[in-house]
Amino acid sequence: MEDVLSPFTLSAYRSFPGLAEQCREARLWVRALVRDFHDVADAVEVVASEFFSNALRHTASGHPDGEVDVGLVGLAAGVLHLEVIDQGQATTRAECQPPDPMRPGGCGLVLAGALSHGWGRVPAEADPCCGIHTPTPDDYTGPMVTWAHFHTRIRR
Image (tube, rainbow, N blue to C red):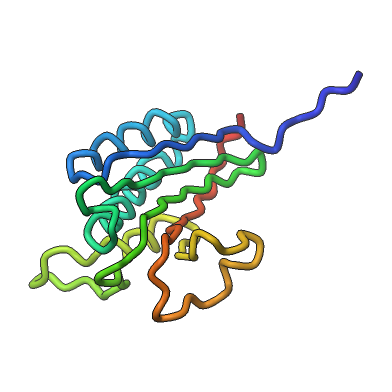
């Protein structure tokens, strides 16, 4: 019998209560999962924290009884895929804004772009194979997946 290598080196998913203090718990959970990927561990942790914070600030995930889901998939090809899923009903939109030292906050998506190989947002119902490139309608209020890819040299 021949050994078959799995294309996945990591696959994990967890729901967190939509509370500000749970952002720390999400960071610690992500850190524990990616610690063996030394070259991208810090970046994945920072981006997960930024996406989690945006879910709380801009969607129903931050309302009473809200939740934020976080998923990580590591592929044998050297890609780590992070997903943060909010509960939709956005009251405001997180937007990528140029850094401004006079404005508190607003740098999370700039950081995500700088620290990841790529990132984006798609409706949770989108087909993952083609939804990444499909524009989201302005009036869409459903759950969104905010994702980022990280390239790592570490192979497990």
